[in-house]
Every structure is written in C-alpha cells, then in structure tokens.
Image (cartoon, helix red, strand yellow):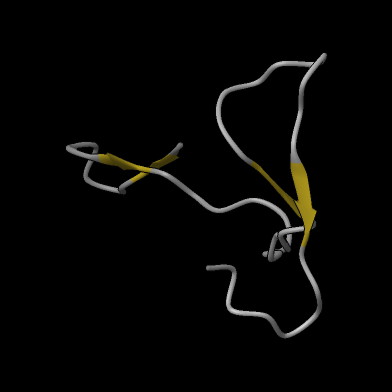
Length: 48
C-alpha cells in the first residue's frame, strides 16, 4: 500500500513490470484429465 501524506487514504501501488499473457490452448468443457479435448491456438487467430 501507498499511504497519502495527509493520512486519510491508502492506495495500491504497482510493483514490478507489466506483462501480457498469451493463450496457448483452449479446453472444451470442465477439467477432466481422462477425456480432455484440446485445441491448439495458432499465432494471429481470433480465438473463436
């Protein structure tokens, strides 16, 4: 937290670098390790 000088409010302070997560694969349905169906995502696809 970052506290204001007057002591009335506290604010969140960003720590570390910003980054972007990239989608690698899609899973259809809920997690089931025995019957998973995966679709690889190709670079530049619309993820639909």
